Length: 221
Image (tube, rainbow, N blue to C red):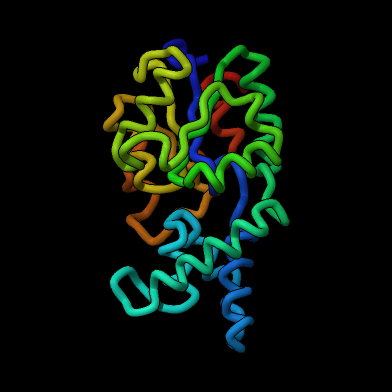
């Protein structure tokens, strides 16, 4: 095991859990209600990491500042809140990884930009809350990623130094936040990735192609 690492922190959507089906479903339900055809799932999935802004943008071509954007965003969030756990699940390959971390007595936690009103029902519904050593949501601290404060707060709650943590995420902001917090960072290539720079240009300590890659990086596999 990488001797200096005592805690693994995960981004939530696209890293630990696959919530894209429910988020895409909420966006397409809005289009269907307006008599519009659904947007292909493959177009919506990469935008999940950008939240309501990205989903409304992909589904309707509307951006913050545009007329009607706020109403579309609010409707999207309402629809998503009504179907948080229809198809959302922990990534199948992540299940044994969490078990391996726990067997190795490595604590793990969640740091997400998703607001608490959406995060808590999902984390509780998937049986993760009792297992996670820390849960930091997008509105837990005054700042959200890429600011380092959420990650630093997670380290405080776990009781370990930031330098003893590794942060795993599927967005450029995750790597930026982790580096700013003084943590090792791993870029999750199985995630949503968005439309930013290619993942190998994010500046992470390593790019891991699948969850098992985390155990290999930690020298647990």
